[in-house]
Amino acid sequence: MSSSNSPRLNRRGFALGMAGLTFTAACGNGVGNSNAATIDARVDATLNEMYAKYPNTVEISNKANGMLVMPLITDAGFIFGGAYGQGALRVQGATVDYYSAISGSAGLQIGAQQYAHVLFFMTEDALNDFRRSSGWTAGADIGYVVDATGESISTDTTQLRKPVLAAVFGQAGLKFGATVEGTKYTRIIP
Image (cartoon, rainbow, N blue to C red; front, side, top):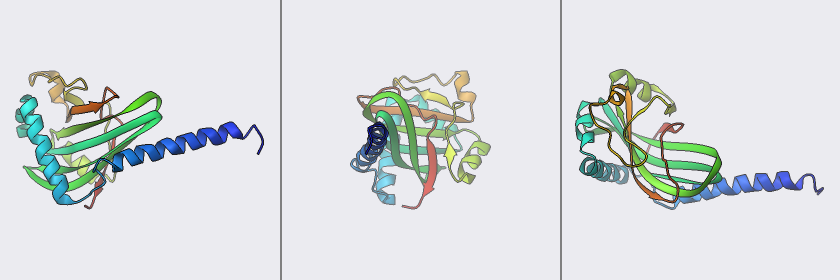
């Protein structure tokens, strides 16, 4: 092997190793279990925690046409990173579908974190667009009702006029600033 190929192989090996580390981190935290009863129990616990810590989300959930609850997202990276989790879509308080969330990133990043998030679909159109999609990706136009620092946003702000709102909370780990932008949600069968 020539020395000119060596750096390329090392970078490729590093990227593949990080992808494997991210996958291992996601599978090792219990999110790899796609049992519907397990997901539903985690969704219930996540909603109870959110309502207790962020009372503004109770009113928002009452106004929402549907909510996607992702109880545990594991996000790990060293230069390249990724995140994975599973959750449920609830309409009128009942689970109607199960989803996985996956995202990838590159750039200056080191660390790992776990967090929960809830997407509130505030219009029927937003909910229908999400449900009809074969793979819906969160955009930068999402409004936050609990921001990445864990602060609640008042329910009387213009942020709440957006068709999709997000609450990101319960962060634990060494990486900060969790958001949902760029996360792809795909329907799964548990």
